[in-house]
Length: 523
Image (cartoon, rainbow, N blue to C red; front, top):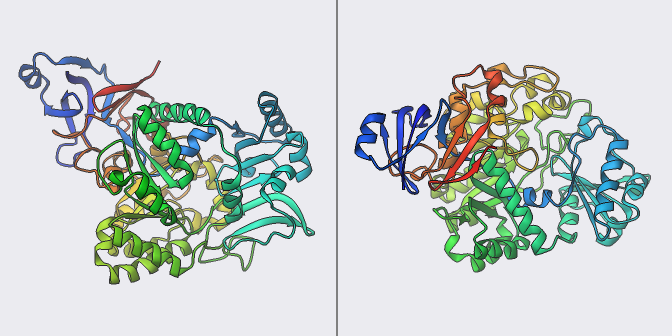
């Protein structure tokens, strides 16, 4: 069925023709753009879609998030916005009363919001003696009740793993686990049933669609996810495009389970590359930095992989012709990635053609950007950090370093391609909020953080459309509005490039279209 969109600004994201009067689709593909009368005459049977002044853009593309964690979040108690111990206790107890058996899981705890970190005794009390796992908003650390620690085999004699830490006071466990210690513990905790997960995935998919996103990432695929993904594909529940990145260790099992989906390409599910983790969280003070954290002489955070392991992952990516994504928040972690990438590309020159990506690159130094460009790498920034944790970054890193967090304008000047993400479930997959953050760069305390790193709205939109499609090697199929490309569209209440920058966050997604079919309409 042909559809003719007209009556509002149409932003194509195509540099040669950034705007169009009308757009004609035929099923899942864009047929033509141009003058409304001419397109109507060429396709008199097309269904008219009057925009009524609303803006039409390519559907947003998520360059990095954790789809399964977003789905699991619907099965957990949210601690977002908790600012005091009484509210924390109330939410956990209320959730426990509605889930009378088994483990309790909470997400989104953020001590930078003002709530003190609960003691182990407080965790035990609010959980009623049951196993309780509380994830920090950053996703890099968490809290476990006594029953949970016992079930996981974590004792006072358990050594800290390399790249992680088990919280202790006077030799006694506090319930706090950080980085590798946290991830290892969480991987051993029991998961929800297949029926519960299916419902969570359905709701997660609807959430992304409601924010205008039609392509989503599974930013750290592990073998435990395989049964759920088999079920999703078999049931037809997966309606969006999902791009999953397994760890190097998980690659053999992924290849066996999904041999036809390995590597970049079109389709509902693809495994375009691999994912490695090089450091931690800047607001959690575990990101690996070249210089000390403020107020903590001699402490720079820490890395999670040695150079040998990073080089092995790069060699595997080159041999398998798979893209490599590397989580690196701190400038020291970014430096490790760039140092190893230079060595790997000397051995495997084709590696640079695989578009390696520095995920987050929050504290990437402006002096490191020329090297990023030279090595053919990309950055996927998390500009919402400026709003959510910019004030914390000022405390942790001082004004000089904090002002350059998510250095989009510096990357633009250096010719480094970049995309924007939300690292959901760390924050909601709200692309318009992200665009607002990149354009305005205001913290919650009202600080204008790094005004020289602000970019125009058009460039911010490109980071979540055209550039994001390029990150996935799908620039010929999506990311801009052009004849032959996918009819993945988003209709916004206003044109983000035509409103005052501070109002961008108030724009709403009115409709999301995937493959020519409407998958979300704002009520």
